[in-house]
Image: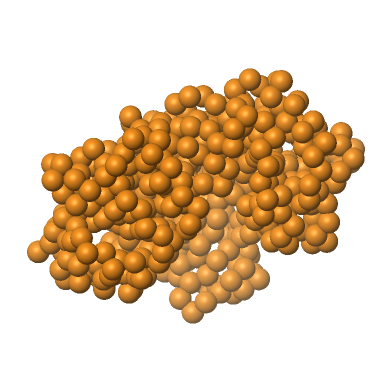
Length: 462
């Protein structure tokens, strides 16, 4: 079969590729199609054609796979959040493990690395402690809404249609967020509809309402509501804060971030506390952390504890070691390890994260954590302390090659590498492999119904 762009074909899905897309191989030629699972027979239009692969858009499922399940969420076939709801959770874990293994083999050239079975998420619904919803003056209509001429393309608040920057689905209920979050979302929707202020339009750059961010503390069952607007209108946002806090006593913080940035970014240039405090608190293990509107915190609290427990296990500290944590963020890993080590140093480039890390250490009465602000490749060479154990927890893009060279030069006896991207994990481990034995990799699922997977790798110096 000769595959051509803009042509449609009947294809059988035989596998799931990393990134969560279905894979068909007509005459051995790979075609990637979103929202398909192995065993589906589909009709798909080719949207991109390269020499050795192609991408297609699903038009219709001609024959459903025996593996296909009914998704719990009515939006799971349309929004970009939970594309794997039609796959049973046990099978999701199998594919996630396989994606880590295949990344090691095909990207890193690492053939004999032990990848363990995935540690599952304690909850597979209502697990996210943070959700961000976008406002739109013209929401995206779903197929059953298009059939009803009385339904108007008016205000919506929800999640984006994949591949678009301005098309928002009006989400009435998100299944991966705790139920109270849906009640808060509905109250905000009704308030905005009744207000005289329009939603922000990313094309015309006009309008007032931009984003709603919800944060939930699992340990304390409290909520933060962050309303992002284009300009200051204190009477309106204070009225909204009053409605929300009267309806939901669990809300302990209401913030207003204000930004006139033309890009779709929810971080404000100015931040105003409308109710309560400017943060909520969360607990990981025995440690308490302050969470401000824009601070980074792992979105699955209970699975984060599973992840950090594995970091502790691999670090195997006795209380005598010096630990350096690269990409230390708001200090969660250094603080988690603080009572197991002699001294922990964290390096982080984001100034606000370093400020939060220092505050979190003070909050927990910790005196053996020290945090440095700056680019790792600039800060690391200036540290006189040679670590016994190095923790590496980079963003999705992995380590800069200069940082890899510095790690090899410092040559710690043990490295614990925490990754949210199997592809860059494989690439970085390949560079470290000449000097380090990769003992094992433990995947930890923090994002049920998505293809994303966290992994912890243990490396020992040869």
